[in-house]
Length: 133
Image (tube, rainbow, N blue to C red; front, side, top):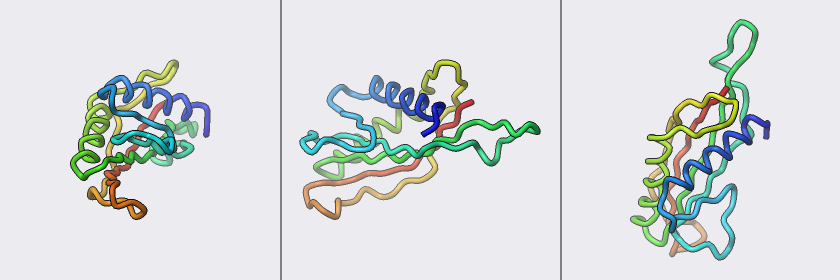
C-alpha cells in the first residue's frame, strides 16, 4: 500500500468511526472472531495513480477503491449498519494532512444476502472510490 493510500485509509476510518453510533464497530480487513454484530469491515485496495486524471507532467491523484461489508444478525441489521457508514461517506470528506481529498463515490452495491457459511449472518456490501492528491 502506498503512503498516500495508507494516510487516506486512516483518514476514512477515523471519519467513519467518529460519525457512526459507538455501538457500531468498524474494522480494517477483518473482524475478530468474537466481534458483536452488527459491524462493518472496510476492505481497501493498495491504491493507484488515477489513469483518467493525469496532467501533461503525468501527475495524477491517488485512486483508492474499497469495499464495505456490513455484517448483521438479520437483513435489517446488516442494512442499518451499512446505511450508517454510507451516510458518513456520502456527507463527509476525511481530513488527511498535506493532501486534498475528494468526496467518496459509491460505485456499486449488492443486495443484502445471507452469508454462505452461516445461516445467522447477513451481509450488505458496496464498493467505493476515494481520490486524493
